[in-house]
Image (cartoon, rainbow, N blue to C red; front, side, top):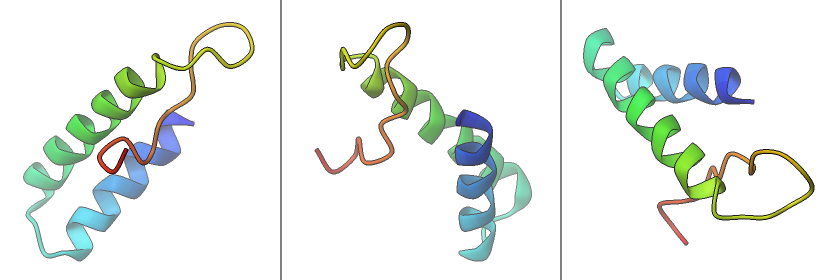
Length: 57
């Protein structure tokens, strides 16, 4: 879900050597964009999925 995506994005940014504050900011931006991109899909009922590859498609 979104929590796992956020923590993974933060960890990946920290592994790239970014400071914690920037890693968190970029992680939040990524998850926000992924949620918005997933809302375009009508799969099942309820909210759309988290679109993890939104920057590539």
